[in-house]
Length: 126
Length: 106
Image 1: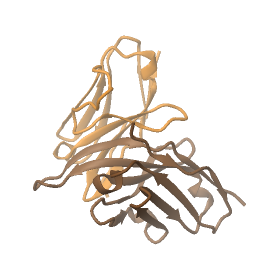
Image 2: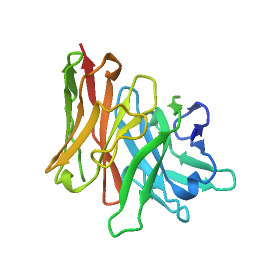
Image 3: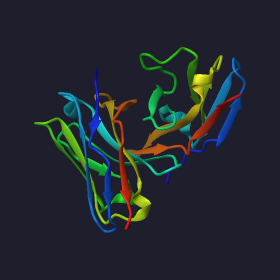
Image 4: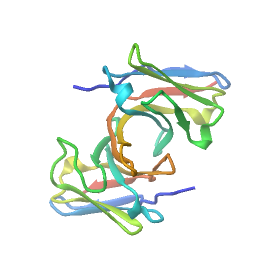
């Protein structure tokens, strides 16, 4: 069964950086888009960005531009999300999720985020 | 920036039909997805490409999308369907989530 296994909970001080990993099964990273989504306590889902399976290019939502870096290591089938200059508002559960997107036609066909990691709790506190 | 709007809460009696809406400008021209999230759990995809159910999702879950509104319909709602539901769409290479709807089965 396909799984995305994330790294464990983190506690960080304001101004620090956090690196969350997400290990996928073989071939996932070269076939599926990999999303990062976060959820603050009691709040909704917030999309952060994505890694493209073709070449590993990235796209980030404007809110996190300059603070987030998403990378991948295809040799270990792992994607990483680093968030820097942490503040208390970054306290949240961070999820990775995969999505298949068919880009062979003029119009892309999106298949939804069908597999999610278990989530990584990041707490930012002084 | 593009926005998706959902009602904060919807209530339904067991066995009845629940409808959760998601509104956005010309949303019908995009594909809508729906996710179910229970407390302390990761989201689960229940509808993609407006109307399609992933393997393992019960038939009582269905979706539609036209004009400015996508709708998730749960027929014969069960107590286990009580959860938060989020709609999602792509807009200009960006993923947008709705604010979420808490479905209460009472």
